[in-house]
Each structure stands twice: as structure tokens, then as C-alpha cells.
Image 1 (cartoon, rainbow, N blue to C red):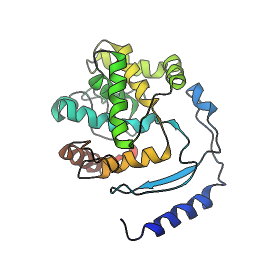
Image 2: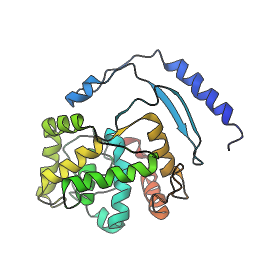
Image 3: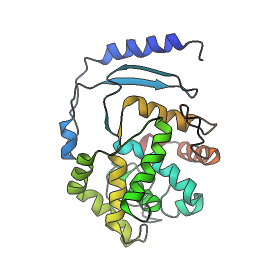
Length: 249
């Protein structure tokens, strides 16, 4: 038990109250189904690696994970395929471009890193299974261990992404041209869209992040070995190696 637990909860609540009346920005509409999200939903959640959780606001309201799935899928690729094979398909350098840019590294013809869409699609190609259902299920089951509860994919968001994801299709076919992904493009994109459509709440994300932060490599809530420690540390060091840092990813 953290000795300053009450202070952390106080900080979370004060911060929530301070920013709860901020209504800047707009909900995302590049995927039509995302435009239905209530813009008034707001929560803060902090999870410690010992499983303590501090929260305020609408922390139990579910939403789709979208690009936050990327580091978890990348970790799965590192574990399942190893560093060298994974690096053959996706780099670890900042791109300096928009997350959804239709661009590859001009020298290597790989995506710059796994946090831009091109890299995440390449990773999805690596971790997909024999069937679309099996690949999506494997990802969901792994994320359940980190979140400590049953999770599911939002079928409506998945359908919306699949129907309108033409930019991601263009990225995928560009990578197919250079041999970065295999020729089952529809299978790869289904894996990627499914990962992005995973339903989570604020508490889930905090616990999933704590799992990555836990150098013991276990889920703070499930006490289950989740991730291979050496690969987590290696990935974090590579992300931090650039002077520009991973914020430009």
C-alpha cells in the first residue's frame, strides 16, 4: 500500500474538478461511429504497479481503445516473433509526420515505427492468426489479463472502421508492394481494425499502462506474467534513444 494513497486520490479529484468544465475540441469523426461519443464524458484514472487505482469522473464509461492498442500489439509481436524478425517489418525511428501519413522510410521501405498507422498495420500482419476471429480473440484475451476483467470488441465501430478505412487500405497496399506485409491484406486490416475497436474504460487503460510499467512484467491485478521483461525494457530504450523522443511518433 502506498503511504500517500490518500494524497494521490485528492490530487486526482482536484485535477478532475479543475478541468471538468473544459469543452475545447471536437469528437473524432474520421470514423463515423466515433462521432456518436458523448463529448461530456471525462475521467482521470491512475494505477500503481501494486494494483491500487485512483479515479474520478466517468471512469467506468467504455470507449474504443483506438491507437492506444499500438504499444500492446507491438509488444505481442516482439514476444511472438523476436526482435530481429519484427525489425524486418517495422522500424523504431520517429517519423515527424502525421500518424496516418501514407509514407515509409525511404531507405528501408519499412514503416518508421509501430506507433504510426503504417507500423501498426505491419505489426497486425505479424500477430494475426490463421483466422480473423482467432487473431482478434488472441489480442482481446491478452488485453483482458492486463485490465483484469473481460473485454470485448465494439462490433459497430469495427464495421464503421472497415467500411471507411480507405486510407489504411492505401497504406497496407503500399507496404504489400514492398514486401512488408503478406498478400492477405483484408485479413491484416481486420486484425488492425479489431484491435482499435476494443472496448475499454479509463480504469482498464490505467491498469494496462501499469502492466507495461511494471518491470516485474506482471499484471497488477491478475498477478499473471504478462510481458517478457527484457523486451519491454529494450522497446522503451529504443523509443527513448532518439533525441526527439517518442512524442513525435
